[in-house]
Structures are given as structure tokens and as C-alpha cells.
Amino acid sequence: MSGANGMAEESKRAVVTGASSGIGAASVRALVRDGWNVVALARREEKLRALVEEVGPAASYVVCDVTDEGSTQAAVDRILANGPVKALVNCAGAAFGKDPVATANLDDWRNMYELNVIGTLRITQKLLPALKRAPGGGTVLVISSTAGIEPYEGGAGYCASKFAERVMARVLRLEQIGEPVRVIDIAPGMVQTDEFSLKRFGGDAERAAAVYAGVPNPLKAEDIAECVTWALAQPDTVDIDQIVVRPRAEGSYTKVFRER
Ligand SMILES: NC(=O)c1ccc[n+]([C@@H]2O[C@H](COP(=O)([O-])OP(=O)(O)OC[C@H]3O[C@@H](n4cnc5c(N)ncnc54)[C@H](OP(=O)(O)O)[C@@H]3O)[C@@H](O)[C@H]2O)c1
Image (cartoon, rainbow, N blue to C red; front, side, top):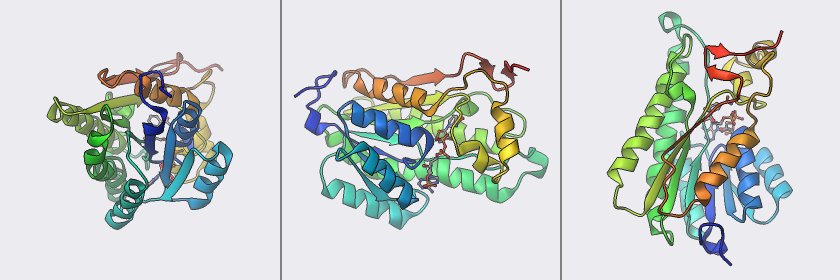
């Protein structure tokens, strides 16, 4: 049986990090719907278990902290022991705080770098050889952000980490030219997910809700998942280098339409 890009269905096996919520969980659902086998990775086992029970036997999970070398190596070993991997979807990521540079918390910055930059690098490095062995070639996909394109006040730490993530994807693409691997960078603008802003503001629900207040139809996790499945479904030799996707109401981080 072949999929849209001619791939045999049995060779369509993807790893999704950050799969326990938001964009990662939506990507797992959409990929399974499109005939992929998916290994869902994150730290919270109960959320991963519930997701896998919901989507059925085409999905499995491995608990993995991408900021931890041993945890990530163990996860990769387990994944590869169970078969080849065709795509890695890097969704694990977060923003911590929104303080000005002058007073920013160093640990917030350190944690964003460890997760968004080093964590993405760590698992990408470990899976890259296997991805390149996939029939027809493999794909590294990162969910970066428009924060990695246009910096904004209070966002220096998060923006810098997302700029770094985008540069990593771009340079990997250049370095791997001629090799059987695609590198895809999807940069979303405002996506209303349950946890992202809540975590950013240390659990302050009011502050988190204010991010989306009055914005008609912010993007949903499912919108980004559709970008992921579409980009992956292109023929192996077609690399969707970059997608920038925003809600219609958002022209830039600082130019957002809000209904009163
Ligand atoms: N929401 C937005 O507006 C937006 C816009 C642009 C880009 N993005 C990016 O999209 C990605 C997903 O965001 P989201 O909105 O879906 O947020 P989310 O719901 O908070 O999802 C983040 C995911 O990352 C996982 N994670 C956190 N730390 C981890 C670690 N150390 N190891 C492994 N997994 C870890 C979390 O699971 P566990 O806690 O269970 O580990 C969770 O599954 C992030 O990279 C974010 O920067 C989001």
C-alpha cells in the first residue's frame, strides 16, 4: 500500500517530541489519521498513555526528557530497536517568563536554551543516521516560531532560543545537501493551546488568557498539525524548507486585531 508521496505505509514511522499536549499531541493524531505509525515522546507518562489509548495501535509512546542525555539515548535506543524511523517532528519546547532583558531570570533563559535549542539538537543528532537510512530518505521537522523571525519586548530569551532553533534547522539543511534527508521548519504565530501560555506565566491563568483575549480565531494546535502532515506528505525529494503560519488576525506579534 502506498501513501500520497509513494511511501509504503509500513515505512511511515514518525517520532513526535512534546507529544503529551498541544501541537505535538495534535500532530500525533493527524499523522495516525494519515497512515503513519507514531512514537509519542514527552515526560508525562499519564498524558502519553491516554493519547495512545485514544488514537489506537498505530501510536506508541516512550517517556523521554530531551534535556537529559541518558533519557534521550534510552528512548532513541528503544525506538530504533523496534524499527526504522522516517520522520522526526520536534515539538518539545516552551517559553518561560516575559521579563525585560534588564531583569530577566537567568534560569528561565537557561531552561529555554536547554529545551528549545539543545534538546532539539540532542534528539536530532541521535536520530539523524537512522532517518537517512529510511527508504526514500527521512525528514527532520522543527516547530520553531515566528518568535524566531521577529523579536519582541519581553521575549528576548524565548526569541533568541527560537532564532537559534531556526538557524540550526537551516544550517542542518545546508550541511546535508546531497544526503537523503529533508529539513523542514514550521514557524507558527499565535496558537491557542491549553498549556503554552500558562507555563510561560508560571500558572497565572489570567495572564495566560490575556494573550488570546479578543483575538478572533487564534490558530489551533490542529492547524499546525495539518501543516506538519502536509509537509511530510510531499514527495521525498520535495523539501518544504519553511512555513510561516499565523491566524488571519495577526500581522505580527505586535500587530494583532482584538475585538473589544
Ligand atoms: N502555542 C503557541 O502559540 C506556539 C507558537 C509558536 C511556536 N510554538 C512552539 O510549538 C511547540 C509546542 O507548543 P505548544 O503550544 O503545543 O505547547 P505545550 O502544549 O506546552 O507543549 C509542549 C510539549 O513539550 C513537552 N516538553 C516540555 N519539556 C520537555 C522535555 N524536557 N522533554 C520532552 N518534552 C518536553 C511537554 O510535555 P511534558 O511536559 O509532558 O514533557 C509538551 O508535550 C513549542 O516548541 C513552542 O515553542 C508554540
